[in-house]
Length: 247
Image (cartoon, rainbow, N blue to C red):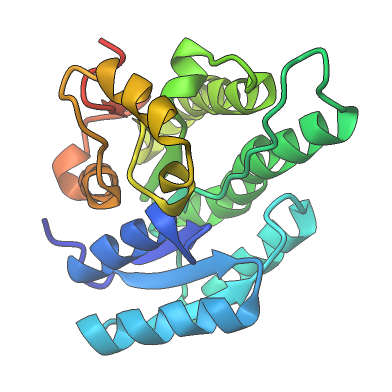
């Protein structure tokens, strides 16, 4: 895949799947805008990618749940690079609780970060993409958004909402050479997963046909494909990277 000179915004790029996505896109030649909550961390990631791959990288701290911050990030990117080619909406949080115990704050926090952020950044990039008649939007959902999961009603709702939103964007802008697709990871080997109890991990593994956790790089490669011109005729799709959990 060749993403040389493409300008890519990746939210939640400081660690885990987001970092792997930024790293993989940069390895294919894309210039990266790393968005996360802390400027120092954004700068560290951007500097590492730039040194490793020789691409242009900048870090921008933002509250992805803020409509104004989303617009400001895109305005900064347009000012520096002149356009946005790729948007990866990856930022997300969990506030797990059983429904009877879930607070309004736990619900609202997850919806604001996981779902509202997708609206905020997509809304901000669409006019520049329409102007260039080119855009690749990849939104990160989850197997939980498709199958549901006890104790994650807020997270499942946010990730399911991303799927419906993405299909709508694909229909609205397909004729303008703007694609919008979804990657739905299963259980991926990250710090969060490794902190789970071993017996719970064993139960998860037993439910995965491939009998292993996925890697962040495997998710990132799927994102890179959808962000490339190899996927120019693919839009409105949900690609599952979950070892066969949802089939």
